[in-house]
Image (cartoon, rainbow, N blue to C red; front, side, top):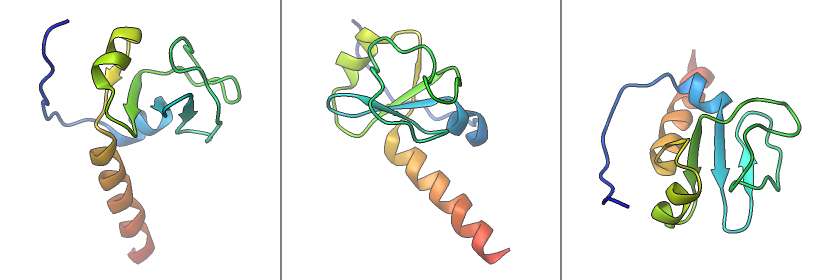
Length: 95
């Protein structure tokens, strides 16, 4: 597998939030409905809400390993995702 490099691109955070699979050490979570225990190695959609996964992020740093298992998904930096969604939520509190 070639080396990975971060690239910044403007994206629709609402689309990411609806279609993001968050990979943990053992299983994944759906960012849309918060369903836990999803097999991130093979799940194409959330078993609870049915949303199709287009993106994947991880709380730990096994990016290459996850990309090898899920080359069909766009990898999102989890810290960037948390920072952006946090800003949106904070802005909603003040306006």
